[in-house]
View 1 (cartoon, rainbow, N blue to C red):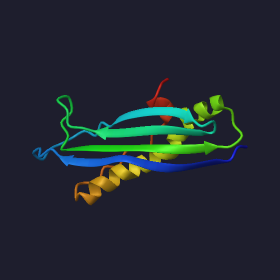
View 2 (view 1 turned 90 degrees about the vertical axis):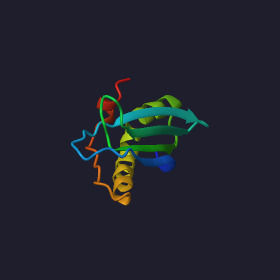
View 3 (view 1 turned 90 degrees about the horizontal axis):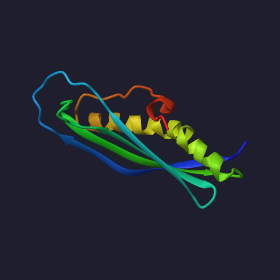
Amino acid sequence: MANIRFQIIINELSIKNNYLEDGEFSVVPKFTRNYWVESGNTGFVRLIVELKNTEENAFPIDITVDITGAFTIDDTPEEQIKEYLKYQAVRAILPYARTMVTNLTTTALASPIILPLMDPAEMFTD
């Protein structure tokens, strides 16, 4: 089994108050994922989680969590690293993104938003 090391890079953490009246709101997060391999055994997966006020779904705050996981996987062909990045790497960094969403909302003295557990294989169908 290959040795896997990773670190989390925070690209953006933001929260913005939309000053909406109190009411019932639906949490509809949007997830974006990109992945790529550099320098042979190092791969990256960028995960962006956004909760936004839109015309279709009013939401009292805009939240963006944009993180990148940098994975170094020893003695593994590049194609296998790409396959790992596609879903397994997202599984590794998704809990960090979920926690950041919760921490942003509680630090802003808003009701905490706790995103549900999700399977990247169901979130991304490529």
